[in-house]
Length: 341
Image 1 (cartoon, rainbow, N blue to C red):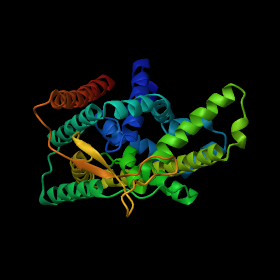
Image 2: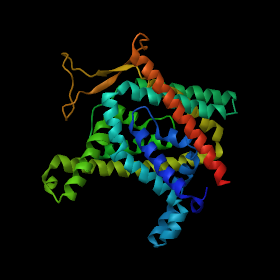
Image 3: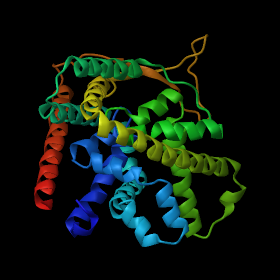
Image 4: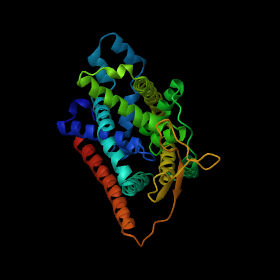
């Protein structure tokens, strides 16, 4: 759909989709790319990011801003990114609260969304060649293997933070690969998606109230530096990964979809709702603590649900809600495509 033909409703829902992508990408085990894939705008998202290239740079530095905006499909990208930014300072905070207080039900809803996503992709996938089946199996193995890795320690070295930005944004462009979970494995999830974002929120609030005492707070300044470098890394990752994915989608579309099916299926283990957190302990049995005094997560101890308690059935209900959300997104994507013709 050309950006000139977008109605107000289309624009509003683009912001909502960006909001959903941002919220999903912040939840460990869930991929923002799945939202784009199921909602029917994944390929437009990738190809629009591909337009951020040398030609776009020349248009920009020559002050041809209208041409630059049209060339990169700016209205589409701008509305999506607006939704993502809103998400990071609103919906994601709600999700933080829900995960702390209703963890089982949140994981159950996302588990259902991933099941729905697998159904959505498989039902239209027709190339079940031996090669693609092998790629699906490889994707599943990689997804499961990632879910079994133990997290590293937190590291605020700016070069490492930049690399985390490139890797962490992978969930936006690679459906089934959770950027947030990768950040947990790298040890920097709390630093990059909680502490630094909260530092920016606090700083904005301080500036609004004309309070600049934060300048003398070295911890706040360091967190803002970390967030800035992480943002540059994320932007770099978005652009570079989109060029790679644009190429493989153009030349190896079925093989790419096969890998995506495998990734998403393999990620089911990450978001299995019935699990307990396992924390790291030192050699004498004391819990290991990070710089903020929080226990360091080692991994999860997954277990089969107990069908003698009501919470299990509530969890299953939320799984069905998650599946329903994906089916609704599929329906909406089809309606949008039909109306654009």
